[in-house]
Image 1 (cartoon, rainbow, N blue to C red):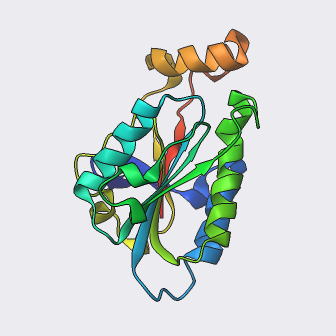
Image 2: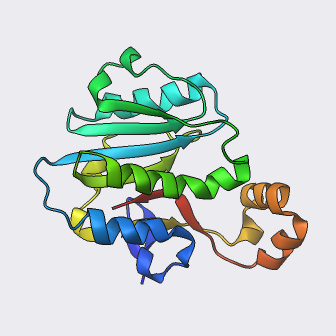
Image 3: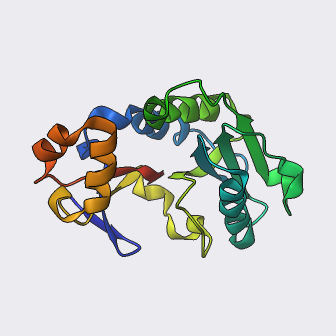
Length: 195
């Protein structure tokens, strides 16, 4: 079952492979809690990025959001949260740059995000997890999310055959043999998810 959201086709998590088990756990455990204060959180993961990339991400988010919207960035470099217009809404969680190889960090971030959400004192109503490098906000992303939608992820609009960008990074990380195996497949984007 596909759902149209903000001009992109999305499918509910329950029909996706278990690559993102943390989202199921997030949906079943955290989103079922009674919320005392209606706060939202954006969570980004920045391994190996320069400060300027992280600053752009945080500043664009803070520009369009309210004091009820927090941003948490897992970063492999030190970033000073007090430098932002609403430092109380910014949390930087320093992670070791060599804690995981970069390929593994792509997957391990879900476990770290899940662990953070379980351990935080906040009961967030809406949670968005995104990449940092290529995400820039032009509006409050939480305004587009209805909490009753559950946990959502996005489908890429094209087959791998029609997407040289995805062919490139998959080939660089996993080899051209895998690219050829997957060439006629659709992809689900787990880098941007919400619920």
